[in-house]
Length: 148
Image (cartoon, rainbow, N blue to C red; front, side, top):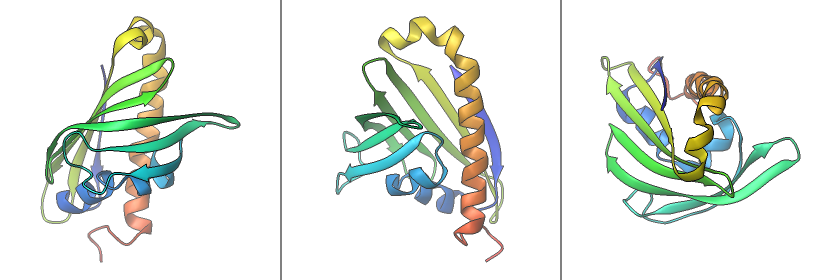
């Protein structure tokens, strides 16, 4: 399992609003190319969205499904970029005060992918660290930080 954590310049509900809105992912989630479709009841358990992920010209189209949700605190999903990558991704948001929060992003490989985790974990950690840093920048750029 890879875990990264960072302070966010916005309240827990604002951070949760962004992480539970997949259409924002291409703005801040490293590797997210596009969101093709989102279930109307997302992020309810079993709801999903279709996405395209990749780097440069190499892309994969697949789906992500919600396993568990606790509004303003937890979003757990199974992310697929098959044929090789399937992982459980958990976003946990913790209120620090009315104006900031802490985000923990955990990623655990599932299936075949887990046999290569020891080799891939450093890359996943770097990607996820970059993603949560970009999320903090996105919150400020979108005017969702607590200064507004």
